Amino acid sequence: MVNIYEAGPFEGRLEQWPVLATAGDLEVRLAETDLEVEHAQRLRYSVFYEEMSAIPTPQMRDAGRDFDKFDDVCDHLLVVDRSAHDADGQPLVIGTYRLTREQDAARAGGFYTASEYDIAPMLNGMPRGTKFLELGRSCILKAYRSRPGSMQLLWKGLMAYVARFDIDLMFGCASFAGTDPAALALPLSYLHHYHAMPEHLRVRARPELYVPMDRMAKDSFDAREGLRALPPMLKGYVRAGCRIGDGAVVDRQFGTTDVFIFFPLSGIDARYKSRFGLVK
Image (cartoon, rainbow, N blue to C red):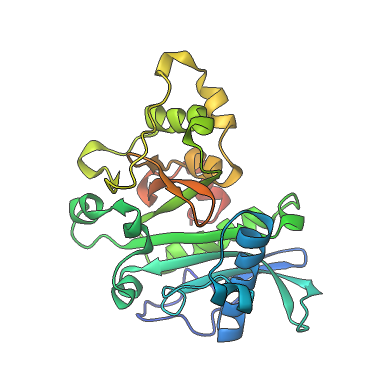
């Protein structure tokens, strides 16, 4: 296997990317063909539209896939179970991340996150030369969420990608299930009070979408309860050191309430650097 940390620098899309990590029958790597991207899209459709409450377009429903204009320009990280196969006889894709770098976003007309948040303060406020990576469309097949190693393998793949392209800052939207912010008062308030982005870089929800997160006074709840109320992936982001933008956004198509995550690699918790291979 190629050592990802010793490979020389190059620009452009990844081709013939090696397996990044394994755990038993599971492996994590990047999609290399259109068919593999379609498998990721089918997984997303299964999770977001069939299991959860997202509303597909007629075209998505007919295809049984979640897709948009960003899929053709982004990289797609896949966790594959080599011991299981889908209806086409291909190894089963059980987890995915969509990864968008600046050059990818330029081809699509901007970052996906900009549809919900004003990200200009962050893009303009970071030092010149900062390398950005937008995270999106992350999901794991339900049967694998409690399987040891599935989420960790997805993160190992992400951290390998980050190291390969010398990424400085990850960002994107993380979601709570449901469209009633009042029902999420505890976790939203916890994020607002304990994990706000630095003020000079703070990203804010677009005015027409802005939902206040400061729904409970800081002294009215236990911070540990707020942390426990977070969904697993967002809890992992927070524990690793991410910060949160100003304002939530209700996404009625996906049936979620979204928050902005700001994740500078320089601020990642040392335990996570060691666990996912960022300490060399």
